[in-house]
Image (cartoon, rainbow, N blue to C red; front, side):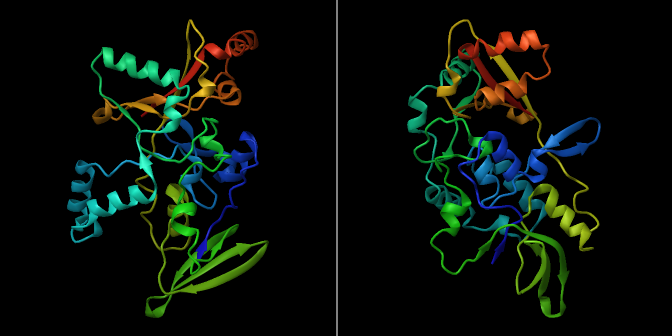
Length: 301
């Protein structure tokens, strides 16, 4: 049985409604530190594979070697690790050459050309998608179900798996004999389940939150890290019609070792408006009136 705190994906939902339904805290999880930022985390059956750009990168050798050293004897030392990653990539139909790249994506092509003039490393992004229609709705949930999600690939067609949505786990208790007891709320009722084995996969914040609330760990969450996305709205001299492109077709990796990636972002009027909401109303109107000349890029730190 899989207990999912969020609902099933609602593909008919609009952008704002989709974010409200499919993210924790309606898309706003405040992080307090040297400065305040918001952390986006999926709360939907299929998790992050439903609300992200469907990127699929193999584990970098440098990272895998670090994990092997930190956790000797763990799965990271498996002799079948590489073959398993290749097999999953095939199962998820991962490719860096997509039909969607041929239609539009001018802003992504301009990024690639500019990087190449500086001899910067730029790559086509491998993504787990089929029949992408460049609707620019990756972050709120693809309305045409183009993503090869965990729900679609790993769960559908498996009669032995029971997925229960809108079940919010409140506590985990370790029982004698190595079993586990889970308490959760479903349709305003308190329910419970006993399990022989338990896999906790509730996201970066909620996994730690649940472990601490259940008194199973005092360390969980103390070493939390996240990446920050800075949006750049670019205004070109000529029309680029960014709404006919899609997210992350090309990625500049020249500065990856320094912790920085650069790429295109989804483009809709709603996304652009949210990026420019800090502007004076007259400047905001002027920018929005030139929508065909705008592109949105992301610097990931």
